[in-house]
Image 1 (cartoon, helix red, strand yellow):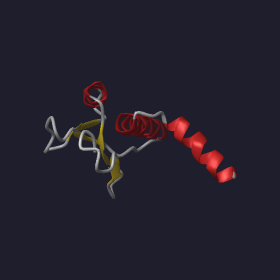
Image 2 (tube, helix red, strand yellow):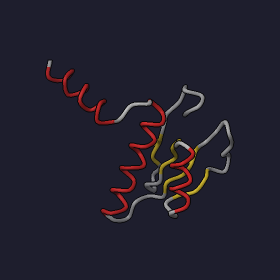
Image 3 (cartoon, helix red, strand yellow):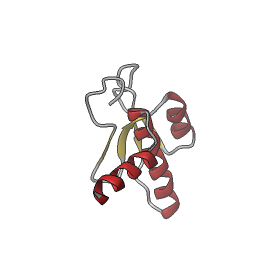
Image 4 (cartoon, one colour):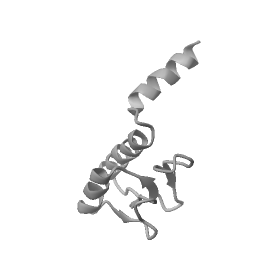
Length: 92
């Protein structure tokens, strides 16, 4: 996960919760709104947070938005651009 740039940007647990890496502002929003908490090992080098598993369609929409934010943070790209390039490759 960032900033190491050598690992995953998110992973899913069996209970539906996720560990992911987010920009500082996104971390603050996630925790402030009660959607998750800092990972026990959180530090300047390990900026991982836990997103609680969604229980409703509305919470699933939040989870999707948080995962997109983690992807943007890890790659510097919007996921829509990645989806478009994947579709172009598949169409060849």
